[in-house]
Image (cartoon, rainbow, N blue to C red; front, side):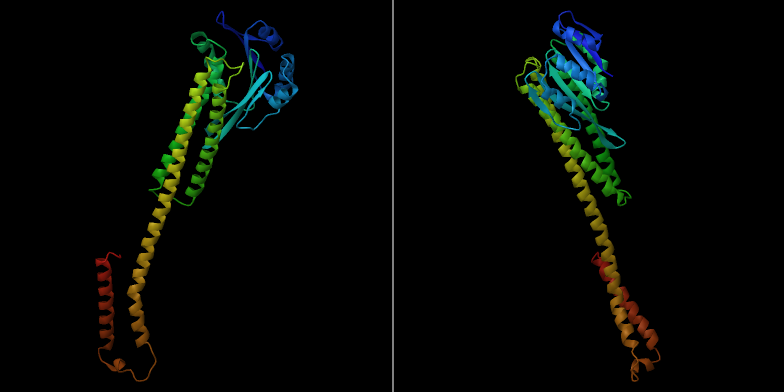
Length: 320
């Protein structure tokens, strides 16, 4: 459903308008904010055509979907894409919003429900009354709220990394590899999304444009710097996850080595005993030991002594 609001910065007034009133409000000098869904494409096309936006720009805006990074400048239009990333059911879920800036108007095409847009709609009225000096306050709110959501997403992923770290010292199975693989993939995907948002904010904050006021650009560029630091934090979490996986593999290798050592020690004990059994189990006719009265007792004394001596030696050497 297409929703439109008009902002009168001179009188500090904002009010909802009908789609048919958008052109008149823009012509009168008021700034319009439009949010729409893919089902409203026909109405958006009419609005853009009324504002003399080129066919190429209209086509690119209305047909853009599933693109994480996009910043395009046209003669009468500036377009960019913001992709929100949140944790849903322990996986990263994205929501794409395409934004078009034209003369005295910002149009947002919402492909999926976005939390940052909901927050904007909830708080923009108060922020408009208290802080806004130009239409750029809407761009600043986009950057501010998307940064908050990215931080919340990173906190959720950091919690997952900590859970994996704790579980490594308990009883784990091979599912840990699948969990780590999914989390690593999500961190890479999430970092790519944040990098895309950083590039968009940097372009908005550094390039001169009639659609972005100069007073707003320093705030947008500062948001880009904060997004850059967030990318570094994401990389740190990924490195920590890789180190934990290496630690787990080292722990598994150590446990396996201890088991092999025990098996080797056990085989060392039975190797000479097996030799003795093989010798005295031969079927030669003349074997004087078989005629001894105490040969059976003597055999077990030798076996016990060898076994006891080897076990004692291996314990002293800390092989057991």
